[in-house]
Image (cartoon, rainbow, N blue to C red; front, side, top):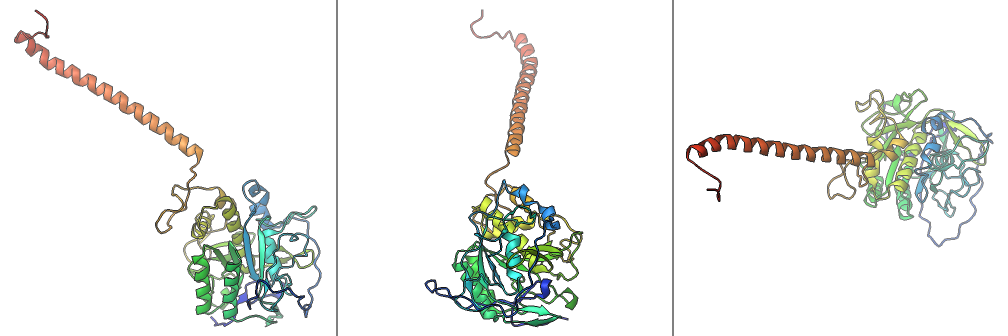
Length: 407
């Protein structure tokens, strides 16, 4: 069955969490004040040294020589991001707290936003295999919720849809290049729709979770359901769609979202699941592209991510996989023939730097073609001359014709 919810819900299932966003605007000149302590402190988490399966699949070390997200700002509209975690130190900017106005977004009473941010930008640490896909990206936290699900029931504060819309606008106005929205609103809200258009018009890449209510009839999720937003579903380590991951036209592609390792507030790591944690893999890939190909528009970045997805069972046929499984390496490295900035609707990936091997191949083909045309012309001229002489000379002999100047 579907349901209509007037408040956005963070689409994470781990640590008993489904979270919602909120957002009162904070003046840029306002002094930040200490946020109150969390009502229910999170249990401490231990560090995990083994490499998680998404990292084995995507191998950030292979991407590092090409791009690390340096110079790119990714806004995480979520439950806050704890900058005290050793792998997020120096990666988290001063953001805003729209649940407790005056804070800078670094307080996370749910652990959801910290986990999402770590998938994007956790830095490498000795003795720990886990790291983010874009470890040099900057995280801009926008705190909008501290909601959790305890024993199947939602509890904790969150914000209205209007405040969530305000959160998106705040992130855009504070120079976010990419906005990660691991939230789901199961109602089409005009303010949220307008905020999405505001971001799209300002060339910001928007990535949103597709929701976890597959067993409840796949109700339409927003912002994933809006034009201009990359909607992300979840897969497990076997490549199959996670049972909770929603299916529908709003799923543009899928990424790891089951048994995913993330950083926990304070220190350590924990395992989580939900489309909330699939979305930041796509947001991180967008950050890599915005660094590696800065001339691409947000729409072209999104198209490239979709066009380079790996095939998946049921991809493109309503099976909940969208175009397929995210492939960050292909997204960064593959090229196509169109140029960025063409004055037309984007229907192909832009590229003004053709592959040198392709250029060399084209040059060899052009040279061979020119030689063939030259030889053909010579042979054709010779043949025509022979035929002409065969016809003209006998006639000339009969008519006593001689070349000019001869007696």
